[in-house]
Length: 149
Image (cartoon, rainbow, N blue to C red; front, side, top):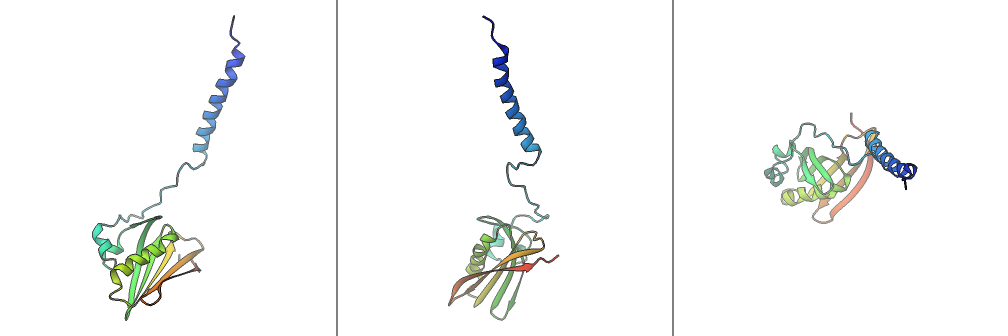
């Protein structure tokens, strides 16, 4: 008995259709994974930079954090207060960044303030400030600030 070609073709057509849909999804913007962000020509930090976060070497590289990367934009000290401005892929890493500065600098400073902003802010951005003192420990505050162009 001859096989009915019509009963075979729809199954094949469904497989071919599924393959086309999957391929089109990749071509037309259905993200399969997160896009790779530019490193702005800044390398990853060497291990020695993590030992001295106030060094010049630590101002020229990306550090790893639980939710992505971060870097120090600037730091300054006023008497016994350290103020750090950092940029992070994810603001959830602000506390981790502050803990790293406190681990290395708590003997020298009686107050450490770390302001963490997101990478590439648009018109405004959420800044997370983490404040540390020996008496109060860590305190976090979030606020919105206009993006600096």
